[in-house]
Length: 231
Image: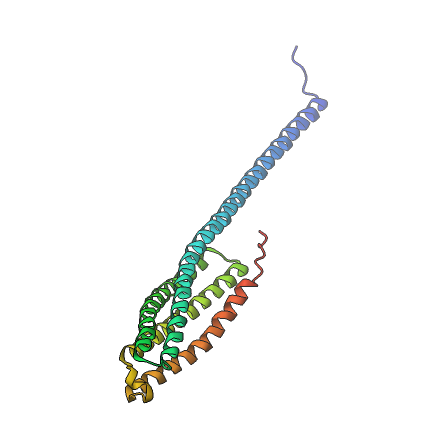
């Protein structure tokens, strides 16, 4: 005999249906939350990879730029030594007691001027390349601590380039003087030698001023505190 649909059975059926709806809701909510979590995880991991990639790219680009900068400094250092030797022997040649000593000092002056001219030329070219390379490096980071350091290297590269050009020109003028000066001219310089000497003194004055800027920037770089930024 079929069972009668009683009030209790209705209540039970409604309770079951309500339970199914609630369970379905919780399952759907859990799935939605999992999807959001997965999306956030993917986004987070993507961001981390991007930051790490940026850091790697920045480090790689910075090291490349630094390589050219160091090469420029090497050429400049060699040129500085050679120019100092040339300048010293030229000064001594002005007080030479005989033509043999004069020519000996002048030949050393000429040889070192030619070397310093070339080294300052290559130094300037590499400093100029460094300016562009350090500027390109900045596109790989948003951290101020790295940007400020890179800007210092841009500034010192610009100063190094200007300094190299000034010293290259000074080497050229000293070479002209040494090649045209004779033992007989020591008592009274010809007008063109006086002009060359005047231009050389002007260049050396500008060199002193630019060296102060270069040395100050080098000090700022040496003292720069590179705190690693937090993510």
